[in-house]
Amino acid sequence: MKKLFSVFAVLIAGVLLSSSLFAKAEKSENSNTMFSELKMLEGNWMGTHKTEKGEEEVPVNFALSSGGSILVEKMFAGEKKEMMSVYHPAGETVLMTHYCMLGNQPRMRLSKQSGKVFQFKFQDASNIGKKDPHMHELKVTLEDDRHFSQEWSFYENGKLANTEVFHFVRKK
Image 1 (cartoon, helix red, strand yellow):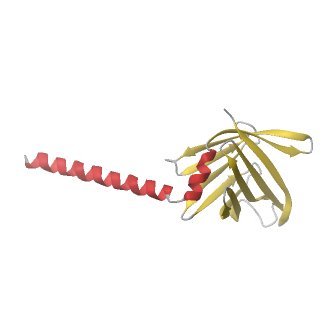
Image 2 (cartoon, rainbow, N blue to C red):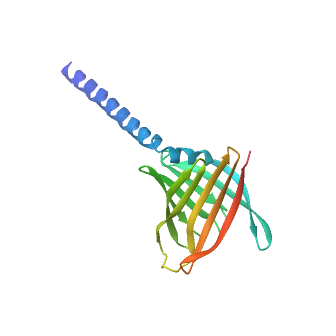
Image 3 (spheres, helix red, strand yellow):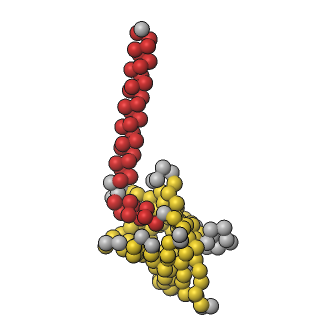
């Protein structure tokens, strides 16, 4: 009987501990409202942006991963020019790492949020020298549940070279 009671006590303690851990994980994830707002991007989108040759279609997919703790963006998935950006909460803010087709990985920190506009600014990077070309800033505007836009600022030789603007519509 003592053995049965001990096993039962261990089981109850395990259930309480795991419930407590899940509650803490859920609380920390939900306490970052900025990241929670970005999660609305989960799904498939089709975008456009202007190029020298006209307008180009840009497929993008957002998926939650790692227990909902990261938001993974894939632009041009499956193509040679595929790029990925990973967003995750970092305390009271959000960090984003952009895995660029240029072979570098700029990391940006959410510096400002105003309503549904999120401004990410360069923090640091891998595989970049001071004057190497790279994405340096990102502005995400959540227009409604079916539309959003991105403005990517591209730096070269230590200064702004151009800004690419993308407009996206959610696919059904």
